[in-house]
Length: 98
Image (cartoon, rainbow, N blue to C red; front, side, top):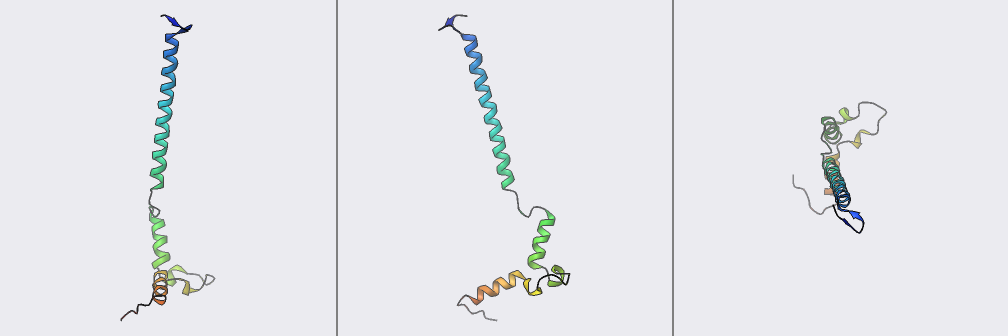
């Protein structure tokens, strides 16, 4: 094969092919890694049954279920949804009709 500027064309073609293939492999690796990270980020926070049960118990469980021991904080610290709604009603001008 003829040489151009004292460079063999086979050597130039093989070097270009190796560089292109390396870039393609690296790009594919980065794409798959990014997809994996995005999929992990979008997972549900309460995906496991245990996490969901603990969340529901802390927000909607009775005081005796949540605080089974005497050394825990006050039992008035439970019933979060009710306390939040009472606080909202307290700070609004709307009067709730019963």
